[in-house]
Length: 296
Image (cartoon, rainbow, N blue to C red; front, side, top):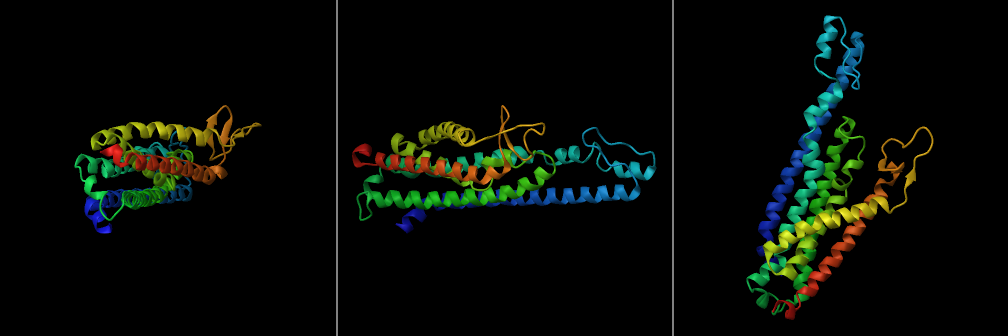
C-alpha cells in the first residue's frame, strides 16, 4: 500500500514541497529585509537625535531643519519612516496575508480532487478496491497520509508567515496581527485540510477530476466565510466603554465590540477545531460515496 501510495502521489508531494520551500524562502527573505530596514531606521533616528535635528512626524510629514547636515539626514527617508516602509514592503500584504491562503487552498484542491475521481475515470477502482487491500483501508490510508502532509505544509507556512507579519506590523503596515489571523500560525493548516477534504468529497460524488476542482474552489469560500463569521461573531465579545474606547491590538467588529489581544489563541484554536470537524464530515461523506454501488 505504501509503495502504491508513493508511486501515485509522489509527483504531487514533490511539487508541493518545492512550492512550499520557495514560499518559505520568500517569507524569510522579506522578514529579514524588513528587520534590517527597521534596524536601519532606528539607527537613523539615533543619528538625528545626536545631531540635534527635529524628529520626523509621520502623521504630518517631515519637518525640515535649516542646517545642511539635518537636511542630508532627513533626505534618507522622505515623507517619514512609515511612508518609506509602506512604499518598500506594501507588496507583502497581498502576497503573504492573502496569497498564502489561496496557494494552500489550491494545493489542497489539486491533491484531493483526483484521489477518488481519477480512479473512477480510469476504471482502476475495480482493481484497487477488490484486491487484498480493502476499500476502507485504501481510502483511510490515502486520506490520512495526504491530509496529514497538507496539514503539516500549512503549519510550516503559517509559522513562517507569522515571522513575516511581526516586522510588517512593527513597521506600521497593519495595526496589529489580527488582519493576519487566517494566514498565520495554526489557521493555514486547517484551511489546507478543509480544501483537501472538499475536493475529495466532490471527486467521490461527481467522479470527474476537473468538475471536483471547480466545485471545491467554489464551495471553499462559502464555508470559509461562514465559519470565519461564526468564530469571530458568535464567541464572547468585549464592548468599548469610557473615553479610551477599544484597547490597542484588538480585533474590531463594529458597534463598539471587539476581541481583545488575549483572545487570539482561543479564537485560533476554535477556528481550527471547527475546520477540522468539517473536514472529517466531508471525508466521511466522500467515503460513503465510494461504495461499490455508487461507482459501478
